[in-house]
Image (tube, rainbow, N blue to C red):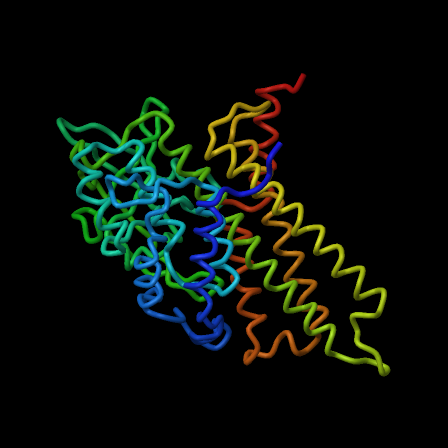
Length: 377
């Protein structure tokens, strides 16, 4: 078995390191000190640099201006972005574009994807439903009315909703199917309200009230939403891994400098054991992430559907990143709560990633359902 990344995947990761090298995690106001959103929009200068480095089009084919890479390459780039808390809709834009490419009409793909590859068109996904815990597709209903689709419902915590040109909204039909509506910002029958995440980022509550969409604006292909949801969840795991690795590095550096009783606290057994436990968490997060990303990229069969590997990865990511930042805060002591030091910002982002697309408990329930439906031999 070969566990090494391909040359193309490694090249994407190296390009990402170059782009993110100059990003300061505390370059925007602290969420602890800023009422409302920490910023009105995403980091547009960084977004332009990502476009120039061809990192917005990793999953797109050459005909749409892309590199034709896979979910593993995207996760490598996302891992680097989280280490510096990059404020860009990279995951949502990439996942939405890949879904339009795989399941959308040729007309829709031609209209959206070249712009998405160049960073001129921003795509996002409404994937949290009403509460963030229930399936997102159940929050909105879709019905046929003549030659159009009509959608009603509410999606909360939509990332980058106020900046995105198009939001992909899952909705369930009366026959139990899930469709994806491509909702332009300001579309008739939609209302966008302001919300805020634990990280201080601006989110959107998207309300649809008899919003009408033509067939070309709705993706009704079987499995489109399942694949998009799996890719989003796996990308979230990559973000959690990159953030956790940076936090543990910060903690190790601090513990090596901070002295108690004439010795660095890193030499104390109680400190070393806690740091070692968090290292084990990160390695488990990494192993389960690459298993899920590989299943998505390869389409290889397994004992469980791909969603099972994604659930395992998200369970480890949610619980692991929480433990990493909590231990980091503990070992930093009062310094960890200093708003002039970036650790508190990592903690706020970690809480958002932990709960994003469902907490560990939700994925444990989903995994249990899969195991019941697919008993292992």
